[in-house]
Amino acid sequence: MNEIAVQGSIMTAVIQVIRKDTGLVEDYILTGTIVPDEEVIETETLED
Amino acid sequence: MAGTHPTATRDAATNAVINLIGANAILAFRIAGPISAPGAIAASLIMTTPSSFGTSSGGTATAAAITTNTNVAGNASPVATATVNTSGGTAIFMCTVAAVSGGDINISSGGLTFNAGDTVSCSSLTYTALAA
Image 1 (cartoon, rainbow over the protein chains, first blue to last red):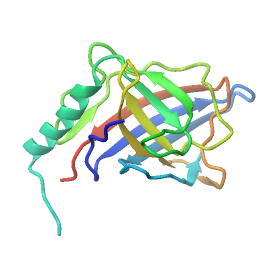
Image 2: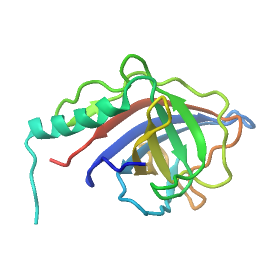
Image 3: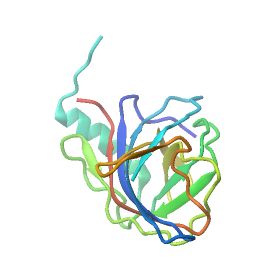
Image 4: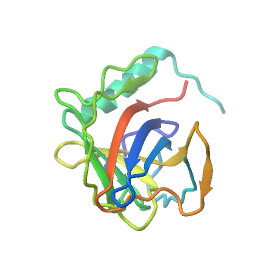
């Protein structure tokens, strides 16, 4: 993959998940920061 | 050292990126992995033709409608990154993903996971190439 984005770039997404097993609807606002190469990510999630 | 980009510069940078994305791009939520070897896709959503993103305004481009995936692949590991790929599968950018919510919030130490067969939709997606 060519890394073409500049550090400092951001992405935001609003997503909804409907669980197949329970039918539960979950809404998330995701924020992303463009990462440099060789970065391994861990994240902590806040959810409804 | 701090730097500042005029809006026109920010728009140019954002438009350069979204022009690489093209139509029918793929928004993929992935488990952890470096950009050189992105993690497995937990959920993928198809973006819109003829343009996945609109023209940048104020340095930010907003995606057109994104198709809901009613049967995602899922993964036991939490989502850690997202990529936007061309329709041919070439990744244009990757970002880390952290979830926040404006509603009642519970902190989940396990993070956001998608299970196989879940339905995932994306009602809003924006991309900003440069900080102001």
